[in-house]
Length: 165
Image 1 (tube, helix red, strand yellow):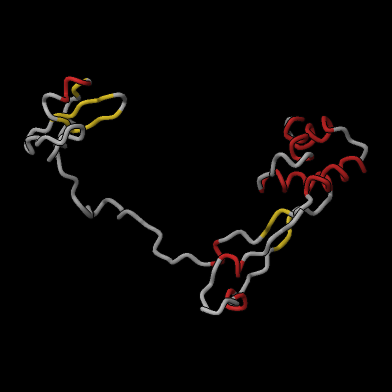
Image 2 (tube, one colour):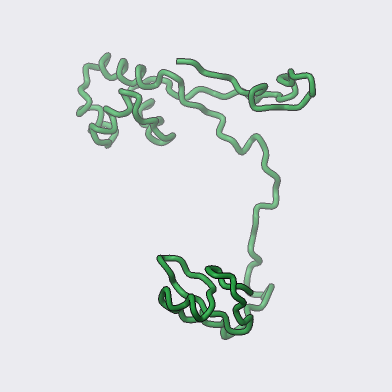
């Protein structure tokens, strides 16, 4: 093992750990004077037994990722205009809408100006209160249809649908 500052050898059995300028490093005795020496981390007093009968084994996600795991709804492109138009059609102020959906006026303002994209929960509240449709279904795409370059490989440019404002 080597000192992380000067490269001199450091004893393997008892390395010196020092905090120097916010970073904890393994250093030699001379370089340890540049910072504050840290205590060695405590060693565990017992070893955890694996698969005890009373304990459940740690569960991990065994199933592979699938396209069905992705959300199937997407926010429409001109959501800010639609929210403002629906609010004005009901002759509500931003304060009125904020009270009805239990949100601050600043949130309504940022949504209507397009500076903020509402999350799914807030979008649902806006849809229900204003009687508008802000979420649209996303169709599943067969990526093989988009292979267009001569090498036959898929690239992001082949698959991506570019939205222009």
